[in-house]
Image 1 (spheres, rainbow, N blue to C red):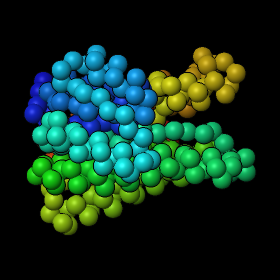
Image 2 (image 1 turned 120 degrees about the vertical axis):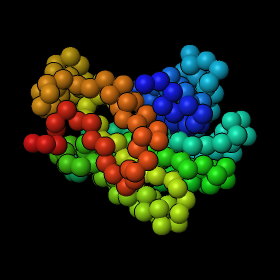
Image 3 (image 1 turned 180 degrees about the vertical axis):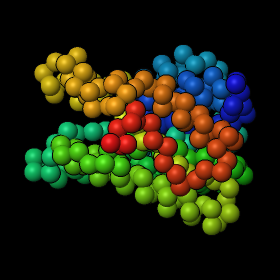
Image 4 (image 1 turned 90 degrees about the horizontal axis):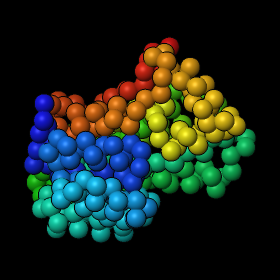
Length: 255
């Protein structure tokens, strides 16, 4: 089925690579116009150029509220509306609670949790300004559902995203805004972040094979596996979903 998000305008963070890039591409393919945002400005420009006239790029550091204010205002001025915000930008540091520094802890939370908070806050502002019955999609992780001994900050931040999502969903519902908010929880996906995690084994291929063995389906996911979930939540097909988790993990959390 084509045109599932026809006429909608979406803003995707961390869209220069990985899950964000795949989500932006699939949203365009399904009829949306997309604001491709990333702190990597050249990367965002390249992605937008490859997507053609339906996409524009913006530099956005999700930890900086003035940048959120500027980008949302410019997206509204450029496209005339804002229907979907995908809070995808994220970082990870593979360290346990004893080896992690306070500076590293704060850095991970500033991107993964503060960035999502700011994204939700300014998504609501932008959607209300144009009268959109919008959808906010927060990319969490299976690490936001279950713990990992060497992912102290990552698990904490992604667990925070899960519950922040529920708070935002209930707030918008009780205010009668018509804005939905849901979270997506991927397992290991073929992205630069997972490449970095796999490299800790000393050999990326061996590291990925080890990660794949942790997934009941037996393989690492592809970025499009998450992009399909994003399109569903962005579309009116999911109009009865808010405050929910969409888990795309190959059975990882079923164990």
